[in-house]
Amino acid sequence: MTERLRRVADAVGVPVPALIRPRRLAPGDRISVVAPSGPIPADRLDAGLEVLRGWGLVPQVAPHVLDGHRSGYLAADDAARADDFQDAWCDPATTAVLCARGGYGAQRMVDLLDWEELRAAPPKALIGYSDITALHEAVATRLGLATVHGPMAAAATFLDDAPTREGLRRTLFEPESVQVLAPAGARTLVPGRAEGVTLGGCLSLLAADLGTPYARASAAGGILLLEDVGEEPYRLDRYLTQLLRAGWFEGVAGVVLGSWAECGPYEAVRDLVVDLLGPLGVPIVEEFGFGHCASTLTMPLGVPAVLDAPPPAPGDPAAPGPVLSMGVPALA
Image (cartoon, rainbow, N blue to C red; front, side, top):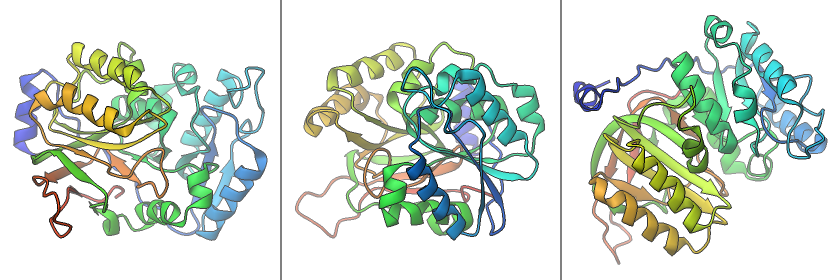
């Protein structure tokens, strides 16, 4: 963590956390699959487990993953989902906890977890995105651990898209090979260079987390990753405005935008982000290829990074695009 980042964080009264990186995976490791949020079709789960076995891992499915719930939108009742997560995390034989899918529900079970017991367990890699943003934030603030914003065991992108699978595999087994991310479609909205600690995820979840025991006070000293799905521009406006009014963006070092699938015309989303976040005066890049999109990138959360956002060069396909370089591998 650089002295500059500490000065930025101190200026707004928020210390930059030194997040611990769990160890990387190796063939023969056990990976526990849990469902903190929505229900999972059994056939998609089976297909995801076969991928994990093909990597040499030993998947362990939590007991309540396929229970279902009368709501139709939860994988099981809150206590069962919390118990599954708790037991998987505290299992000394488990190296990583992989979420089966997102959806909705992680916020309903996070208060039921015994964080003292989780803190006493060996650090593990937590993998997921979308609704799992609530758990990424809780693990960062309560356990001080870096996590992995990446595809999930029963998600369509994981099952149907080879680049998505390979990106996650390399992050888990060979994290040095993906320390520098420069997707071909990425573009600069606000040029500049930023140093910070990666954080973020699904915008609507970050806004919903405000005021809870697991929300960080602000994104100060951070390179903020943002994406979402199925939210109209006015709703994205609401989330961003809420975070801005709460002072959550104060001291942020830079912003990296992922996918905005089914969020209305993309030009409207771009204009909204520039209108609301441009006045922050920090580098902002778009179309970075993570989130709810095909060939989604796996993004480390909680690690020091540098964002280089060169000025856009329209009409010059050889001009360098934005680059996000991690100061350390995602996993130790």
